Image 1: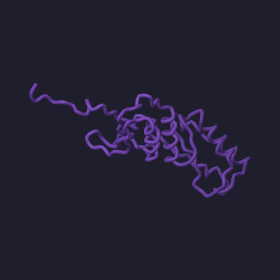
Image 2: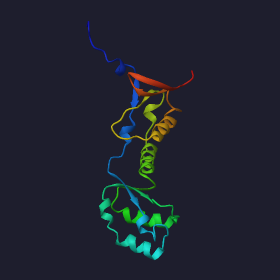
Image 3: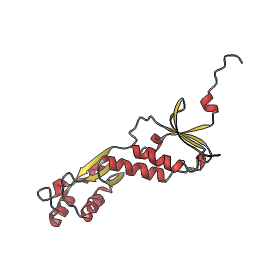
Length: 169
């Protein structure tokens, strides 16, 4: 058939890996424990426990929560643990650090569950554009995961890729 439109990308055998598919949906919030500290710097156990007990944790229902401290206080591990246990019944996920740290944890957990068998001996493109924020570490992580098993690994879009790796013959 003359003039037939052929999708060369579909026939190329390239597999596109979209990190956006591993983005966990949900509202991300950061909870700062500094207001629970005496003068914003010291954990007084009795006061800290009372503040945790009195706080309305239900506002974190179905949210992804990063627990942080905005001051230079030295916080004992148990204090972060206590707050995490108070938030856990409501939140989808609780992590420690900034929202960026939380995002990193979410992607790390998603990629750890990945079944990579479909990528064995394949030519794979790690998609570069996404509608959701994908941290740079996720690109590094998936490249590290896929490189040992793929024929070739590229970054970008099928029409414009940057070669990353090609298996030696």
